[in-house]
Image 1: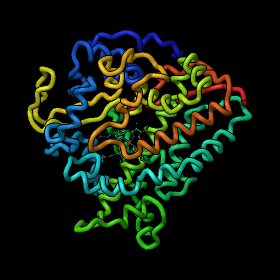
Image 2: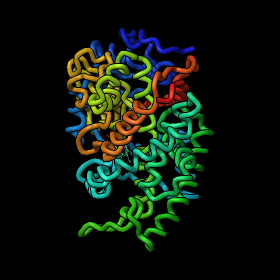
Image 3: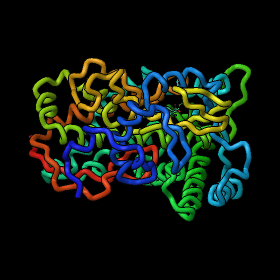
Length: 424
Ligand code: HEM
């Protein structure tokens, strides 16, 4: 049984025991990250061959040099694919739309084509105008369990909030939010490197189901544009540029659906988890509500929802005395950089009044900086403003299961968080 003790995060752990494919390690990689930062900041994990880059400044260097570290991860040679990956690709070719490289999987300047479109649709004005709407959604979700004095916070709150918001933003029916979650899981699972071959192929079939749904919505929005992102994606034209193809549109949907819910669910759940683990910080926040904004940054820093993302070396590159060979895969460990003691004093401590919490890089940095960051911050801020108003004496209802997190080498998702509370 796992509890809320803090010991595992306090000290370094031997790298000989680091296994990114092990679920206990995935749940709490921080003691290993700490050792990596001090002893071996660019560390090649033998199980996957990936190079873990753990220092804040080194990740900044990678982000500034896309010509050396590419976001295009497609193997140049199909022979490099596993049988399951080949079957996965075949399902799309046969029944849906094959994956093409767009936005997140491209490098500047090609990346600009898709990014301009996203920036035009995810504007500050649009997100700033969403406060009342997000507040209302938060209240609605809390109304459903407030009289019970208990809830399972992940499934009753953290999953539906971002799923419903992104469904609305994309112009998809809000009631379809559980399908949206299933589709998003199917899109993300293969990259987590923890699925069986059968599961990987099944994920392709589930994603194809999503693609056919999106296809109908796109065709509808072509004829009947609405004030939603799907209409903008299908109808926006930039001078001298071709409209997006259906393959590109499908790929953009894949990124918006996955980017828009899984990460924010994790951030919301870990925000609560951090407060439960640190009751003195919860008390501090209740005593001074002006700290909520900083708490949002600190929770993203301390329990980074996307533990890391990948880049591919375009040539042999030297980083901290380690030669990463051409085509070597780099894991930019955001979760490690966000606790880098050279950037954050007492980085292993959760402190809602930390001065430079806003320097966290949970949303990445540079050309691929998360376009949904403002929206995610809006949701977490509204959620905790209202939770602190409406719920008192929040406690963990029982010890958590042995595996606290879903299996994945790069995502960080709590499986459950049962809580009790008193209605304020
Ligand atoms: C707490 C919540 C979130 C976290 C931690 C997060 C994290 C990230 C990170 C680290 C990147 C950088 C990718 C890279 O460098 O390759 C990214 C990009 C992206 N995110 Fe988010 N994200 C969040 C919320 C959202 C939301 C709400 C949306 C959409 C509604 C979204 C959509 C995207 C998209 C489309 C990209 C690709 C941008 C590009 O490549 O130019 N994300 N996100």
